[in-house]
Image (cartoon, rainbow, N blue to C red; front, top):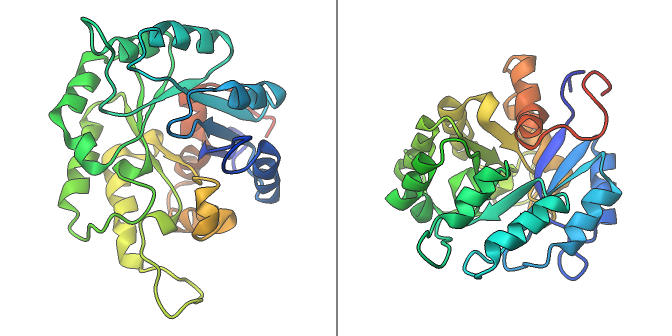
Amino acid sequence: MSATFPLVDSHVHVANNWYEPVDTLLYHLDANGVDQAVLVQQGGQFNNDYILECARSYSDRLYAVVLVDASHPQAVAQLKALAEQGAHGIRLRPTDRSPGDDPLLIWGQAAALGLPISCAGNVERFLDPAFAQIVESLPNATFIIEHLGSVNLPDGETAPYALRRQVFALARYPNVAIKFHGLGEICPRLEPFPQPFPFDRAYLELFDLAYAAFGAERMLWGSDFPPVSGREGYANALRWPQEHFSTLPAVEQALLFGGTAQRIYGKIGRQEGEY
């Protein structure tokens, strides 16, 4: 990578009771030359102690994106407390709403705290007009659509990708970014297996459509560790997307694989020019 931006994995999961502990993640980061990673809390886990502890212990390498139960009456207070404990962002679903008179209270609080909002959902949830209304109502918030606007496995849609194109059209809002992940997430595996390149390249059009909509300055690579270990594996989840975008100018490649993530989440650890 360039001297300006580190290599940042924007989407990983760690836990002490599910998936893998942080030491396993650090092994993969070191083995693949990845400088930093964003710990994204797993769905349904509202105890963020472990990922916050990890982020504090490795404050030069790890960010923490927390999860709260938006329907809980104390969700806003919990989010404030998590921000004070060092949270770098929050994960919400497009359908998450607060109880009481203001259903978007949790979204607004995230914006007020300056916490980027990582959004997990399927195509249908992102295409619900209610999600666009949230984005429009909070122009100062940063929204990050996960998994290219779908789920973390091939979702069955094929070219010309009418639904996914509509998700990518959310790029009309300048405060929306999008994550792209390993090829195993969007490409069905060819058979027989193994092969030098085991995926149908036609599905890589999704990468190109996302890039055409968002540009490198609003796209973030993330491995989806450790689920990726059951697909192509961490190294390939980095190598093949890098190869796909290798014809772009170097500055854009640096944005895709680290610069955009660092801009959104802020710099940690070593400062610019030290990588």
